[in-house]
Image (cartoon, rainbow, N blue to C red; front, side, top):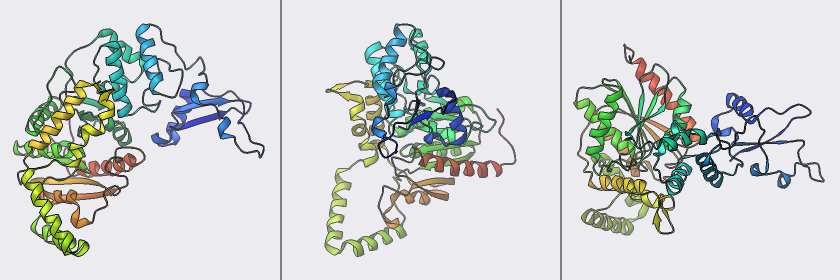
Length: 426
């Protein structure tokens, strides 16, 4: 987390919100500090350099009265205690913003697990998109609102453009789309499609076909007719592909289908297979090449699951299991449902009658082009628009890489809109 130390130089120091708002106008969001500490002067070493070890930590600094509001009742006190156990900033005020304090989707999962444990109330993770302060969350807990939570979540409102619909990845939630939405600008509405099952009142889907039917119904509840703009992050790209194909079959226009580093379940073309086999034979040598073929046959006989999805529950193990006890049953069963849906998915060779806009992470997967199954998407698309962007499969959605993705996605959106003679109407 970034911490800013501010020296007034004889003048009064602006409040933390004023400093944060000013820096937001000058810097990208990921460079805006999550905490500010006001000092009379910077501590110096004997050599006249800043003594970093003597700088106070944020929890040792007291916020000014003008930007700090203390908790007013037992619920707010309880939430503040939870927040202070997660963040390094102390004390936390009831109007402090979860994201501005440095919160992300993983910390959000821990936050709501603790809320459920201590308050006995399950709150969907997507609630943070509309209630990101202690004060706002306390209002939800007071109401004890157990109303059904839909899969469709508004991430960013405003603007006159047609909305973008973003499909969850193998984690099930859509909180990680918030940075992408902010970088696209306030005039671009963004919705997220989170997995059914995060709401404990509904059972998770265990088939991709079920997800597609449900998500199309959710999409058309806010936009009955096309053109539709779809985005799928990693595993969500496969679901977005099936949604787009189903919409097209129903006579609806899909203006944009975008995938963020999604692995392709469809086999390579014959020419790709030939190039791959020749490349492996040259790179590995005859003996290793033959052994790899034997392993491949065993894998096909006994089956298997792609690492991307099979690893999902393990990646969240420390978040959903603590001391051997499941602390977020809804999250765990949703992850299990997604894995089951992936295992049951049988890719049927088809050609999507449109363009796939693909963002390929240049880091992480050290494979040669002939060995990169992500590029197999061009075999099932009428047109394949490839964008190579910095970052890895797991960091593509994070700063600073998400800013590059958003910039290129915005350009693709502009091209898709300009290709249409008529504008979208609410």
